[in-house]
Length: 232
Image 1 (tube, rainbow, N blue to C red):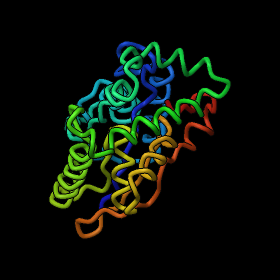
Image 2: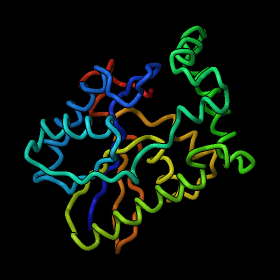
Image 3: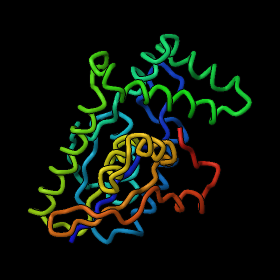
């Protein structure tokens, strides 16, 4: 039996031209994650990282705290969907990330406003009528994530490590959980909105099949430094 830990990357650079880079908060979160893993694991787990910069930064910073010599596999199947394109095709003004950030923080309740925009943009992306407009449609993204999970489970069934860690993104984790719980698209992305940066979602691999154990564990951040807890 193998336990799989799906980790959302640390806080990235929301509202900047290059989102795909950890913020200062994100680096601190990744460091806390590594310290948590140091107490959790007695030996290096099998490690996979998405190929995005924020995935690999989170991987490298956290491993420095627990298993600095550990190697990891890079697999782009675990990459996030292009959320910036999803926003910009919903509202062309949002092709400039700075404009979205400015709009969000002008609101009385920025998080509620961003959730509303996110929900409407995702609704358009997942509508079959518009699939042809996106570089990666919702259906293609979903199939990619399910392939990543299938490939990982096959590999782990052969290698049989005690633990495996995958550094990925919130949308990816939501699709995995949505598949295991048979959630609707709407409920899947509502879940995505609640997944904290560097939180851990845990699966158990039994006879080659994944079973969900826990979702969005982030107490290791809350107990050490609550101010570092973020969802964007």
